[in-house]
Picture 1: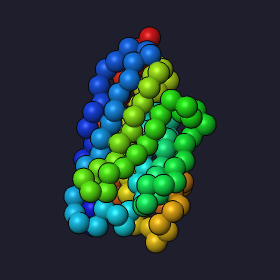
Picture 2 (picture 1 turned 30 degrees about the vertical axis):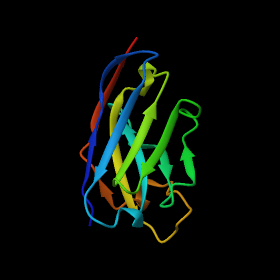
Picture 3 (picture 1 turned 120 degrees about the horizontal axis):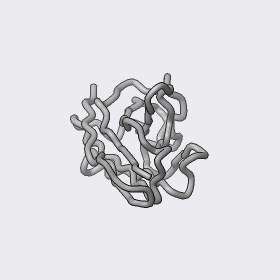
Picture 4 (picture 1 turned 180 degrees about the vertical axis):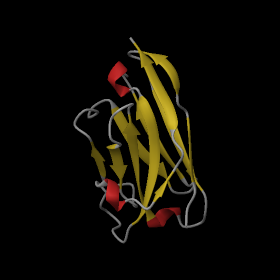
Length: 127
């Protein structure tokens, strides 16, 4: 089992940058493919970005390609989401998720594939 704690959210103006951090407990972080989701008011939770256990393969939603980068540091049990050129449409609660995946090089790209979730961190982008 793994526990996930997100941090780094906040209120920023359009065009600004934020880096979200997800700290995972336990000694088996390398066993998990990781993802970042977001949920805006009245909308379903949607995948933003995902990264494989190895950290060598990533996936991005079309709406964030070129602006957002996911990365992980397996030595620190941490996954990051660097968000640049933020837009008001990026406003949402951002969740970190973990999938105890057998695949070393494949990101998990479906919500149902994730086994563990953090509590979320609010990102608000003003225009």
